[in-house]
Each structure stands twice: as structure tokens, then as C-alpha cells.
Length: 297
Image (tube, rainbow, N blue to C red):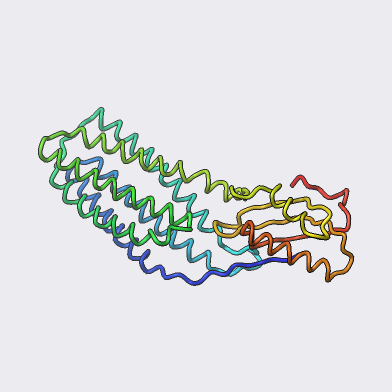
């Protein structure tokens, strides 16, 4: 049995800490502005930004945990903490979107007079902060599901802030109050769409699903081309986290000497890494297929 481990460099998260601070400050400003102006869309944006601050905090906490070395309790390490954080953030997005939709329906039944000038001012401040936060999270989101969820969160906030500015101008100039309710529906729909889009992949990782680009039969076919291998069975391929792929398999070999088996093992590991990016493998070698070996798990 052999394992390959991947080590990660410490990461500078000062930018994320700053992003949490400015998003919490923005949330307070938007709540005050929403209450004073009577704007549901501004309150919706405030809740959206509050979820941003929460998602950034969760992401930051998860990034700290994932750097912890493996121990007796977590022998694979803590890398999957970020996937769990992603699920928490997605659940938060869905909850917020449904709440906003329900509030918008009530606003249709009970419309209110809204102060457009306050909306415009607060939304411009929000847009500036949303852009800063999106820039902070963009580079960290390229190969990381957790940070991608946070970045998309920030991007949707920037778009909704632009929409709120437009709504504020329409309300200020033309007293078109219903646009505030319409905008709330649009923001809530955007949040819900983002969450639903990210949910399947997150669940797939937590369920230890196989990578989309790897087919077990292809792995088996390539390995069987190595001299000295008679058969391969009990193949399981799964994600340890977003970047690491693991595999276990039983290899039936014709070799009798330990040195020959070790040579075959090294060739398999090189093949797995070069062709499938599988960096963690557990291989059990047999001289004949054990009839008692259960391949159903």
C-alpha cells in the first residue's frame, strides 16, 4: 500500500480579512439606507452583502483549516473543509433568495413610498465596495470551488448594485416605485440561479463522486497494457478535494519477486499521474483474483 501526498504553501489572506471588514460596514450602511428610504431592494442588497461577509468569513476559516496537517482523526487531512464551506455558502444563498422573493410578494400587496436619493447614494458606495471585494477574490477563485462561490457572490452583488442605482434614479426622477419590487425579484432570482448552478458539483465532491473526466474502464485498459499485469479490479476513483484525485484498486500480477512488483507499482503510479492526474493511489497486489474479494463497494 502506498500513498502520495500533496503539500500546500501557506496563503496570504489579509485581503480576505479586509474584504470581510468592508462588507460588514457596507451591510450596516445599506440596512440604515433601506430603512430610511423604505427600499426593499436596498434591504435585499444589504442581506446579500451580509451573506457576502458571512461567506467570506466561512471561506477564510475553511482556508485556515485546510492547511492543517493530517492527524489520527483526519488521516486524509482537512482539505475538504473548503468544500463543506462551499455547501454552507450555497445553502445560505438559497435561503436568502427565497426570503427576498417572499418579501417582494408582500410588497406587491402593500406598496410603499420610497426615497430615491438615499438609494442612489448607498448603492454607489455598495458598487465600489463590491468591485474591490470581487477583485480580491478573483485570483483566489480560479482553481478553488469555495472561493469561486465567494467570487460569484461578489460579482452578483456588483451587478445588483448597478441595478439598484438605476432603480433609484427612476424612483427619484419619475416616482416609479414598482421598479423597486421588480428589482428585488431579479436580485433574488440571480442569487437562486447561482446557488442551484454550484450545488450539484459541491454535493458530488462530498459524495466522493468520480471526476467527470475519468472513466474507470479507461484507467483499467491502460493499466492492463503494462507487462506483468493479468487483471485489475475493485477500482474506485474519487475526489479527496477539488485538486486531489485518489484511487484504489486490486492488481493481479504474474510477477513473483518483490522487486518486480515494486517496478510494476511505480509504472502504474507514473501512468496514473501523467494520464489522469491521480496523485494519491492505494494499490493491493494479488497473484490471482481472490474469489472472496467483494467488488461491490
